[in-house]
Amino acid sequence: MMPETPFQIRETTDGVHVRVHAQPRARRNEIAGTHDGALKIKIAAPPVDDAANRAIIDFFSDLLDVPKSRVRIVAGLKSRDKTLLIEGVSADRFISDMFPDGLSISDC
Image (cartoon, rainbow, N blue to C red; front, side, top):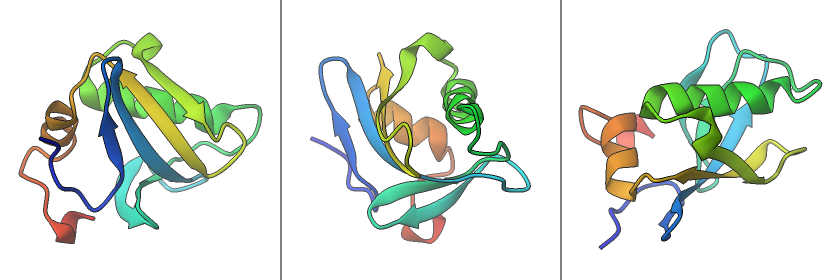
């Protein structure tokens, strides 16, 4: 059974697909709630020369303690709205690692 979240997350045999809304050129990299059914993240890198996309991959790789090669942007390379595939991670693990104190609507 999939955990209920205020953002779209889908577990497959490959891993977990997560909808993300990126806000580039932020002060720091952080989760900033939700936006239109997606997990909103602020990224310090600008949206130039794939810098923001690389920063998103680095951000999730570090937070989930998985190799960067297991985090891919599968949709939205040129958009703020993206879909990530994080290989080898379940939806439960994603949520527990991203929200170690528990997920609540006020987090998002």
